[in-house]
Each structure stands twice: as C-alpha cells, then as structure tokens.
Length: 185
Image 1 (cartoon, rainbow, N blue to C red):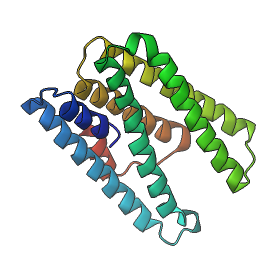
Image 2 (cartoon, rainbow, N blue to C red; image 1 turned 180 degrees about the vertical axis):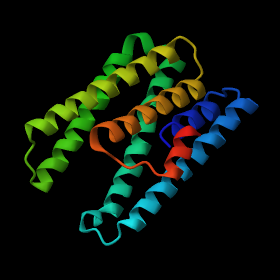
Image 3 (cartoon, rainbow, N blue to C red; image 1 turned 60 degrees about the horizontal axis):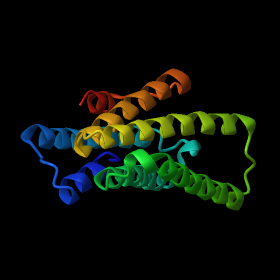
C-alpha cells in the first residue's frame, strides 16, 4: 500500500506515463496486498481464542496509518525532484521528516507510560537507519530522472521482501499459503 500512494500521486500530478506494464504492476501490488491480508485474516481466525491476539484491531489501524505515512514521505521526495531541489534539500527534508516521526513516537511512548528498553532502542535505530537509507536512495533515483512509479514500486517491493524475510528468520513468523502467493506476486 505504501507504494501505491506516491506512485499514484506521481502519475496524476506529474503526468508520468502509465504504460500497460506499469498498470499491470499496480494490479499485482493490489493483488499481493489482498493475499497478504487474507493470510492475516486466516491467521487471526485460527488464533481467535489466543489472548495475545486481543489488540489485532489496534495493530491493523496502526499499520494502515504507517502505510499511508510511509507513502507520503517518498512523495515529498518526488516534489523536491520535480522542482529541481532534490540535490540540495533531500537530506534536510529527511532530517525533518524523521525528527517529526521521532517526536510522534516519543509522545506515544510517554502517553502510554512505557519505558524505552535498550533492546527496543537498538532495534529502532537499526530500523531508522534502514529506512533513512532507503528514502535517501529513492530520492537520489528520483533526482536522476527515474519515474516515481518505478522508484516507489521497486523500493517498497524490496522492503516488503526484506521485512518478511526478517520476520521469518528472526521472529519465527508463520507465512501461510496466501502470504506466500502474495509475496510471490
């Protein structure tokens, strides 16, 4: 979903051509999302009696917000590239974007009255570095004339594969048949 937001905005606002191949990729992305959602629904239904599954609705809302916001940041990079400012301001843009995200997360942490553990801080820093790197290279690709519809789909698709692989390898997450088809799609 994150890739659909900026790719669609790029095509509509910057009149990037949408070829049959690009349209097919959009359809495949949507199919992939539906399959991953279906797998999550199947997994949730199987664990309905599990008390650890009580916050599934909160998780879904948080993930939808993350997808939308994760799609908004790269579009800002597209705006900078469209105005010819990417070389000068990409780093500044990313600093402010991630500073705002840090403050938002800190407010949530404080309001929930949770302590930040060293492990959570380390995981957060690694995730932040990976995210900043990905956004920076997307900005570099955009500033060199690669269409946003290509940059976003490739960048977000690679991110999805890495996240799923990490979930399976490090956290032993189950990948059901629908998710396997979604990932392959």
